[in-house]
Length: 96
Image 1 (cartoon, one colour):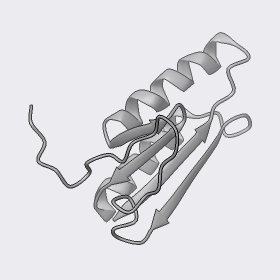
Image 2: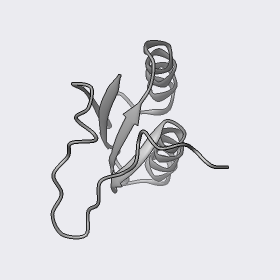
Image 3: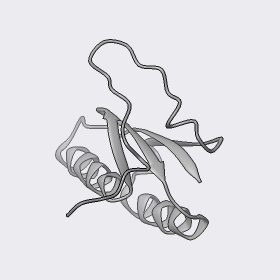
């Protein structure tokens, strides 16, 4: 499945800044950052469940906001970009 994950983590205090870093690091493990707080993710249903569990353990439910949009398959490949944004190769082979 293809997802668009956005987050708004409160950074008014040091614990918030720590949560922000943890959410960003977690998302980097699941997808590609397309803007500061926006990730494009290709994953399975099981991966999504794990991601949701991990995010819920990190965020402050009274201060932070996470939005995950499930987009139709192929949407991430068909994205229109402007400015410095470039489409990302979600389907390309991962070279480590």
